[in-house]
Image (cartoon, rainbow, N blue to C red; front, side, top):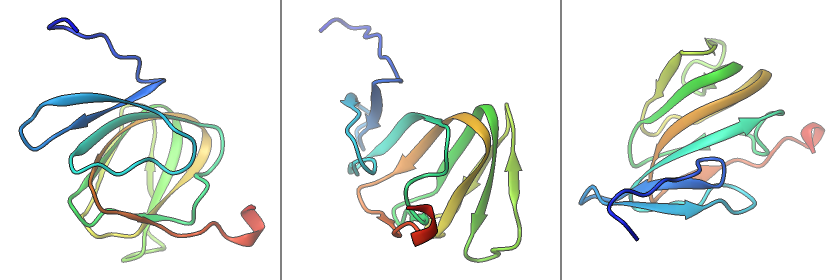
Length: 127
């Protein structure tokens, strides 16, 4: 591999390790894999995530909206919506259970800490 590597974020996420080296990780079906690193990924969403929320105990998560609209809610203040559109971003604090709710089809970039994390099951009405 050369010194400069083009990466298709539609097919790969980027894992940034503690020594700041980067590795392209091919997408798999199901919840995103957890790495002992920061993961930078692109998500094209046409429906709410297939889980009832997630938690990242290793650090804060950054969500940046490229296109579309979402609202993000957390367990600490479940009635406070953080609505985001193109060019907006939010930081979800370490250890905060949160959900992304789709308001329209969305493309977002996330920077997610690992290796630990958890997902709640989807509610029965969501399948």
